[in-house]
Length: 397
Image (cartoon, rainbow, N blue to C red):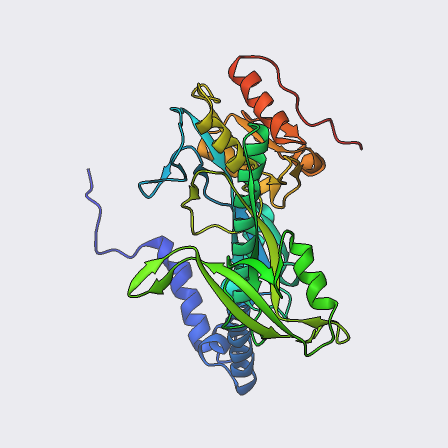
């Protein structure tokens, strides 16, 4: 038997060797052009490289869109950071179980940060996300701080309305106060009034409605001075911080930038509702009006015997009016997805959002559209009792 000769040439290598010999001998072949490019070749290489770099940069540059994705959920009858989301004192409350989650939408892009082209493409491909033009949420003439201030105001209003709706549902007293809900910069009120200041009297006349304040200001010529008696919390008196301190301030009206013929002092005024016992909300990192329905439901649950959810995982969304009317919200697709991801099996939502929601309901989630707080509570009780609950009608094709 003959042993193989390890020093003998490999026949399979011969064609490659011959090819390399031919390439080396031919200074005009394509291989030579790659190894030794001409001036034109260098230009092509540089152009191609520059194009690739520009494309890579373009993919990473911010684009004028905002991404809407499922945000965190908060159990309104539970705790957040060790504190009850809804804290009720001064009256009898009852044990609760299960979840009543308010849902949120997470925004990326706009004034809060850049959304890259890659992010936008990925969001377009994700059915739980949405991508909308930035100017729809953040107009060029509105700063990010203005948006955050407005969102905080809407959230505070939803808390106030939730208290009124819950008290009205339970047939318990509601206390209404006329308060400053916004102070606009560079106006007579800037630095004089603060959000949540209660307006008690204006020019000696008792204030009973928010409309009364606006009508009083507009009924007098531009340049008129007004004496406002306000009640403010968190005022230092003799070195001690006190709430409910009465003060008098004087403001002179100026021309309204949006309607130069109308006088204004630079405030937004609304009605703040409360119960005759303390109800406090501890979430401070959320904005917008859509938590109202779940806040009102949570208050009712804590103030009535038994557990409304019977241990079930319920989530929902919807604005709320003092009379209990539920209104539509934005981001329903993201809130449905976020609720299911958190573990919810029942989702209570405004009936006006049915058209959009009907084609985006995740598997395992039962959706109940409602028009009032009472309808929402009835639906949760029926679900807990094992009774059938209605869903959105099939979309019209």
